[in-house]
Structures are given as C-alpha cells and as structure tokens.
Image (cartoon, rainbow, N blue to C red; front, top):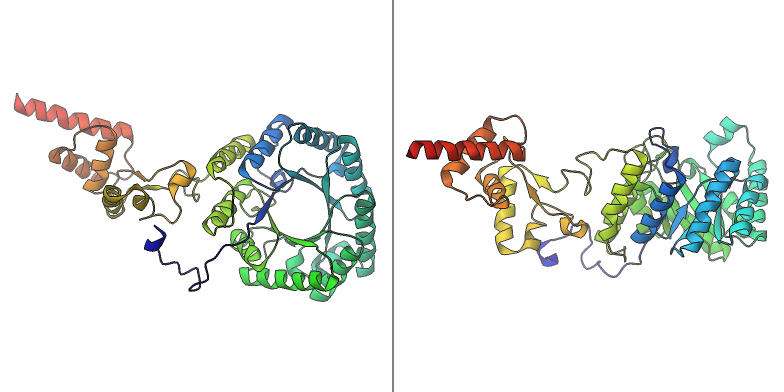
Length: 412
C-alpha cells in the first residue's frame, strides 16, 4: 500500500528509520486544570494511569504534592499503587522553583520508595516578570535553590521555564546554564499560552540544544505545548522533528483554557511517522476511559476517535470505497482516509443521506443481509434525497419494509 501513496510530507529519499519519541502524560496535572472537567476519584485516576501504561506512555505527571495535605496523600497512594503493580512508567510531580515546593516531592520518594522526577517551574518571559514583580537575579537564585533540593536528594530535576516561547534568548540562556550547573538533567520548554508556530518551536529547540551541547552535560529536552492558536499538535510534532527527547500531552487535549497537545492524536501522528514503537490497540480504550472519567464529550468530527472519523454518506466516496473493497480491504481503508481505521479496531462506515447514491444503499442492505433489489435501492435513494439528515437504521428498515409490503400488495 505504501507504493500507492506519494508522500509530499517527505523529501525525496529522506524516509528512513527515525528515533522513537517519548511521551509524558500530563492529564492528571495540567488536564485537571481545565475549567470544565469533572475531578475523578482516586481509583479512577489510578485506572487512567494503568491505561497510560498499556499505551506505552513513558511518564505520568501526578500533580503538585505541595498543593495541600490531601493532594500529597492522594499522590502518595498513586505512587504506591504504581510501585506495587510494577507499572512500566516513570512518575513526575511538579512544584514551583521554591525549596518548600520541592521538599514534599523528596518526602514522597522517602515514603513510597518510588523514584520521582521533580519538575520545578518558573515563569521566564518579560510578561511574567513584570506581572509578578520578579527580578532576573531573584529567579536565578530561586531556580538554583529548587534544583539543589531535588539533586541533593538524588532525584532527577527537570527545570521548566513557563512561557518559554515568549522569553528572551539571553535570559533563557542564563536560566538554563544555572539549572544545568546545579545538576538539572532535563530542560522543559513550555508554550504556556499556545503562542508558538511550528517554525518558532523548531528555532527554540535548536537554540536549547546548542546550550546543552555547550554545557558538556547529557541533559535532555522536553516540550510542553498548549493549543490557544490551534497549533498545539503541529508545534509538538515540529519539536519532535527538531530533536526534543520527550513531549508532554493530555488525553483529548484537555487542559488549562482550550487545552494542551492531544495525546492520542500525537500518538497517531508519531505512529504514521514511524516514531511510535508500541501497539495502538490500547489507544481507543485510553480515550474512552478518559472521556467517561472526566465527563468529556468527544465531538463527532474529532479525528480518529469521533463518531464520524471513518464514516461517509457521500455517494462518490461510498462508490470508491466499495470498488476498493472488491480489490483489497486495506485499499478500501486508505482510498478516502489518511489514517487506517483498522489500526484502532474500526472500519470504514457507509451511511445513507441526502448526498448519497446507490452505492450507499447497497452497502447498507448488504450489511443487513437484505437482497439489493434494484427497485428497493431506487426507493431508498429517492427517500434519502428528500431527507434533511442521515437516515437511521430504523428509518432504513422502515423504508425496506414499506417497499416489500408494496411489492407483495402489487402482486396480489
């Protein structure tokens, strides 16, 4: 099938084995900050962690232990469950660049025995500094102190600059150098307000890589994006292509304001690029579990997982799919789809409506084991053309019975 598709996304002769991309699931941290989600109980949050592990996610962020005593105890319970069930996941927790926010993460490790990444975040853009009344010297000092707390305890310190995509290069270089000098093993670049374009993300990643290379460390780079301009997925993929080691995302893109990079669509695109080495069977189950747990409705037109993702009621499309099916089922799965439905346990669906033709009706009749009598097909097509909506199975069954009754009455 690959020979049938000329891929303009690839430079001639450029396709080769690509390094896989790691994903951090931020649903239980940034995702739960969305103003419209339902906060799931602890046992449901554990189920979401299990689903992420099944999917092949590398790391899950469990939240901010310093937020409250309850937050600490619930995160500790999740850590113990991950430890006891031996789930193949790294665990992260977040806090501000303050020693008092890092100390609960250290305590969490001491209590549970589970290794935890300490993500210490600080706003780095001129906008944040002005709004907060911070000085550059103050931020550098706080960053060093927070990283020191984590590193002294033997934790992996991840230095997170909020609003990185609107920060000045000279100040970023100052903060990054400080964090690396104090032992940070990762730098996380944040498109906190969804400002970046794919080109901007590429330039920022390349800039950061040059700083890491000059530092002589083996620090890795993360990307954390938001979707305020509708570019969350595009910038995440650009960051991957530019060489980040890990991308943060949330299920269904749920997160602060309009949300984050959608994890399931990120995984789909990584798989299409040959960057996702894990099976995809668990992805639909992951999406369904999160939607039900958080009370989130998946739009009908949502890519891959929406009701209409692999559904057509258009006559020309239906005819092409049916002709392709007669040759090869795999061909039918790509003739009007860039994403194979079979990867997710689905199939191409043909509906009947005002834009439909005889091919749509024949597909429905065959699926319901009804002989495709030409007069019955014509009867249903005429009814469909007069309708203002996609006909339901009940409506199509009624039309079939009406025609059958008319035929019998006519014969008698």
